[in-house]
Structures are given as C-alpha cells and as structure tokens.
Image (cartoon, rainbow, N blue to C red):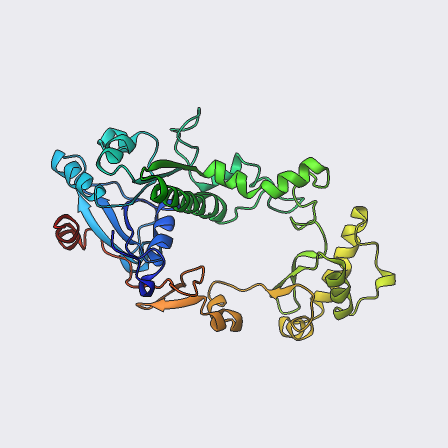
Length: 373
C-alpha cells in the first residue's frame, strides 16, 4: 500500500474491492472512494438485473470507482478475484448469507490470500437467525425494528421514510463505520476480520435514543403522539397560504417563546404547551397563524430569529438554497446534480475524481495495474 497522499483524500493508498450490488454496499463504497480509496467495482458476468436500471452516468452511488467484469462462476474468474484480494485492504459485499461462500470467495478463502483484509458484508436480516435467508428490502427491515411503526400521523398509516433508515443509515453507514474501525485495528494487529452489518441491527441502533425515552416512560408507543414524531404542535410541518410547507422544531422554551412571538400569537391565549390533551388546540392556533401567511412572509419573519424554522424544499429546490450553495453541499458532475462528498476534512479533502463507470469499463486497466505489481 502506498503512503497517504493528502491531495487525494484521507484514504489515499487504500485499496477496496466492491462486489457490485445496490443500496447500502455501494453507498459505503462511494464514501470510501470519495475519501480517496482506490475502489474497484466487480461486476459479475451474466448477473441478474438489480434495483432500478438507469444509464450508468446517473448511478451516483457508483461514482469515483473503476469497474471490472469477472465471471465468478469459472475457476479462472475466482482465481483472478482472489489475486486482486491479495492486493486489497478491504472487501465489501451485500449478498444474501452464503452466496460468497458458494462462489468460493467467502471470508475464509479471502483472508487466506490477504490475512489483514477487512471483509465487510451487509445484509437485511443478518447472517444468522430464522429470517437470515429471506428476501426483503429496506422497508421490511425497518418494519421489524419499531422504526416504521413510529413514523407517521396519529390517525393514519405508517409513512415510508424513503429508504434512508435501513439501506443508508442502518446499512451503509453502519458498514462504513465498522469497516473503518476494523481497518484501524488491522493496522495495529496485522490481522483482518469480518464486519457483519445487518440493517435490522443498524436501524435498531438508530432508534437507541427513542428506546431510551420509551423505557423512561416519556415516550408513548403510539405514532404521532410524542415530541419528536410530529405529535407536539411546535415540532412538525405546516402549510402556508400559498400552498408551501414549513418545518418548525421549537423544542426548547426560549425557541418556543420566540416562535409564538414571531407568529403574532398571544401566550396568555394559548393552552400550556406540555398539556398533551390541549395539543390539538395549540396546533390549530399555530396552524392558523402559518396558514395566514405566504412562505416568503414567514421566511422574512422567522429566518432572522431563533425559532427553529426552515422551509420544506423539494429535491429540485434544495441545491440552490443559499445555505447549500455557500457550503457547496451539492455539485454537478457530467450534468448530474448530486450531493458533494462529506464530511469535510481540513487537510485531506474528499473529492469527486470521476463519474460512475459502465460495467466492466476498466477491466484491462485495473488487472494490468493491480496484478503487475
């Protein structure tokens, strides 16, 4: 492994093999690649179609990688992959339990070729348990954790929170943190290990604070009935007179008082804010005040004070918001607007070096480069 180059990100010189998949595994690989790791994406020849098929340039999760096509059903293909493994520090796979073992490239085989390898695997239900081999997606995994049931209005059905909680928060981010921790340990010990990231585990971990509140008796196990789930009138979304929406999150007393003042409400005419039985009445007062003004008027009133306010923006609007443009939170690469690398590093900044590859685009280039050393 070459020494870290501060101009190429904090993980410059680290080599990663990513078994092509979708969701949490490529998300983890994207962040590693954004941080400077040399990530090669292994495409399986004749593999079934995955996810939502779109042209390669729009596969933002695949950016900053090179793609190698290998037929893993042949002995020659498996041998080639294991030779690449011997040159790598990390491997990422997101298949069902047992798939990699059946291909002959499971942890045992890979760690024999690369004893210090960090072998990261992410699944929905985990590598063990009665549901381990069952088919599923993000929504199914978070349904088991209590997270899905907790999201949505009190008088409605649970709301699908995109696939942020399972795939990316509880899956990709959990795998990423685990792999980086295991990599640090491998640098000390000289031996690698397997990182088992399950989305049911990760999504449950994201609920740690909420489960603590439930155990303390200050959280009701009923959707839309609590301070942070839209139940509290001062923590939620309201519609403006011009059909837009704003978010209010005035949890602390001083922020709530500022909000009430800026909305033109009279505190003495409002019910106590912590009286749950009066929350519908308080919500009506706040809602009426918001509904009497346009988004522009509310932004003018609330943006300059500590009211914990922000407009609800669409994906088309978000990249051009002044806060986002000031930080460069979004960038455009080859005509595709996408989130910029995060987090920010003061010495070794992450960056987008290349767009998403076409499957197998760099096969000859990578094999010559990696295996000629």
